[in-house]
Image (cartoon, rainbow, N blue to C red; front, side):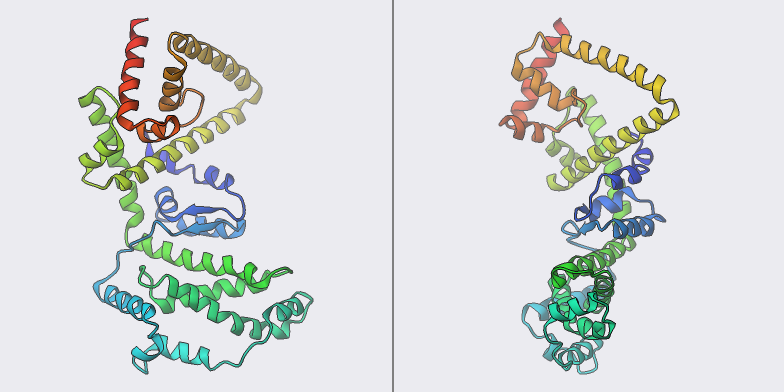
Amino acid sequence: MNLDISFAAWESALQKLAPGEKIDALHLLAVTEEDSLEDALEQLEEKRIGIDITSLAHIPVAEETALRLRREKELVEKNMLMTALSETDPLRVYLEELAALPAAGDLQILAERYAAGDESVMSRLTDGMLSAVVEKACALSGRGVLLLDLIQEGSLGLWQGILSYKGGNFEAHCGPWIDFYMAREMTRCAREGGIGGKMRQGMADYVDADQRLLAELGRNPTTGEIAEALHVTEQEAEAFASMLRSARGKSRVEEEREEKEENPEDQLAVEDTAYFQSRQRVNEMLSGLTAEEAELLTLRFGLEGGAPLSPEETGRRLHMTPEEVLRAEAEALAKLRKE
């Protein structure tokens, strides 16, 4: 598989995401080039698509920063940020200033006044929501980005949320904006830590191991076998496999779209004929198998046009173990070779 072609399908991947949906941060880093991340982030913001940072459990940082991150996480868990940090610590100073702000009042009423055109309440809206920004930042403490940086990014997101507010539940409207800006900063820091490059290398290594084990074993290897060959966990190997399947599918869709645009009428006729012939051939081949065997091969090799599934995914669909899937697959293929 040509990884460069697959990663170039970012635009087609973006088109499939709807406002309110999220893209996995690791996936985003893997499918964007070094110099295209900012463009991708801008497009996500424009389309109101979030970033799922669940997969960013660890972001590589310098040792000094790592020590501070651990300290911040410890203090958050003990609820001691305001007392344990030194009096001149910028984070403590900020939190003390925030605590000293006067009560903003009913934020929903203020937001409705703002939506009606009263911009004089914007500062009170901002001040009233900063505690929510801090709370969200603290929930992400220790995960690669310093709290003050997360608060700063969240505050920018809050500002965008206020500017775009037209009505409805004010806090529910601003929440995703705050989350997006914090997730955006974490994704940027992960890229700086080289996570995107590591994922891309991991995907390439996965392809190499898959092909090598296929030749050695005479069958498709399991995710566990590939993980063992790569000296990674099975979960990490499955992440590589999932992104590869997604990249393959997006690349295939993009290629088909480009081919149709070149000569739509002629291309459609050729594709219809080719599709009919290929489906007819597949049906002829599968007719000599049991319904269960035909379904298993269809899932494993994507014979109905979908992405090929791993033994683990096929097993979940058919209520079988990966070993049972591979054994049944080998038996079904043996039948086909005899015909």
